[in-house]
Length: 604
Image 1 (cartoon, one colour):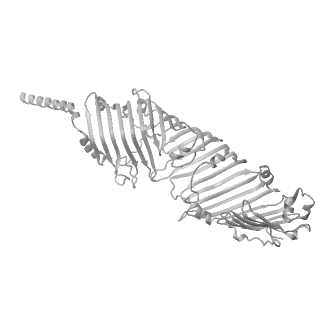
Image 2 (tube, helix red, strand yellow):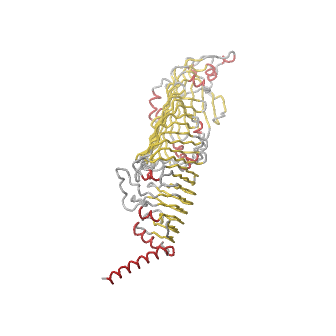
Image 3 (cartoon, helix red, strand yellow):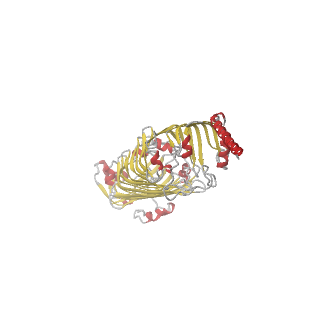
């Protein structure tokens, strides 16, 4: 027994001596192959490490080179993650008792790809996705990292729809002085090739580990003079979930924001926005948002974003309310595009669905104005809709609607617009030279199809009708049109009472027929007919009085306007102007009855 006891003590001493020697000589060995073998077994995919050295002591010094983690089968590239160099100092005792304490951590050259396979598998998870616990999550394991620095790294996220979101970190740091001290986070890099900086003041790591209380954060993103800030709390900060706080955006130009979304333009448009931001699960809500879009004043409005699941579209809804909305800076932006070659395609499975409503108490465009404007529309699978546009302008009501649908080749367009009771006197006061008084009505119907906007323009069928009952026509204009000889002895003044007006144009591919164009007054009837060529920029229109309706002083010689639209030649047309009854059968169906029911349709 004594010899057995001595033998066991000797073996124990030998084991202790071997362990001590192993620790002392640990930095002499390359542990990369051993760790790579173990990591490959745990992750179920190949892991390689070019080199791994560990120096023992109270603070373990770790240095790793050339880490690579293979991607899942079906991934877009063979390697999911790779890292050029890692250096760390970890408190040895904290690895036994936890949570870990890291005094220094430096990462250089990290490239990480996060994506879904065709079957929906996420390459950053092993096995099925864990179910989120109903109660507070366990965050007690979070290590205390005192000093972290990441350089020359990139994180790429490929969505289930195939969109690529790329974030580059040129230099990022995380610093705190202890578990109960606040954390300072800063980063400089880019998103979608747009320079972005981040500054953040966070609560302590101790509070981060406590899942029973919301975690406070003050985040500030910047790109040039554009800044985005969030000050509030999150109940699940690792998922940026349960967020509740104040969001502020200041953008002297929308160019950086649009560039992050892969779009161009926005150089002349500024935006200031502030509102209450919340996130619950997949739902983001910005409520009570106010601000300015250039000179347009935004009243309390709401924006919602519901993130789509795997292979599902995000769903955006908005309700924007403007006190005043100025369109000039928005429509005059410098978005460069080839309009003729732009594809007319409606995505059958859009990545983002949209349902929105915009309203404005006052609307301004150039020196014209409107009130009580509302616009609603949607982007749905295979369809883009303008459900309704309504406003009050020039004393009348204007409405419009339309939609674009996907087709086997390109898309199909359909649009309708109408105006009712537009006061011609108000048009004159706005600087539009109209030699008439009264209230004007009108309707436009249009349809087109094609693979590009140019194809649609060539195939477009547009029908328009304007009409009026009652009102007045400038006597001077009437006598000019009828070539009244009394003009040689006097200057006509005042208005001629109008009983009806009818104007019809039917266009196909930008070339239209004007017939009839008729104004019936107490002194006679002015009529016209002709042809309009928008692609060629030319007009051929004959206008004159009908001799059976005018006085004996009228010569009733028609006038022909022909040539360039902006500078046509004016000449006398031979013979008399003879108009046939309008043929509404050539118009789009919705306008045929409008023409037939107009008293000016029948010539006399």
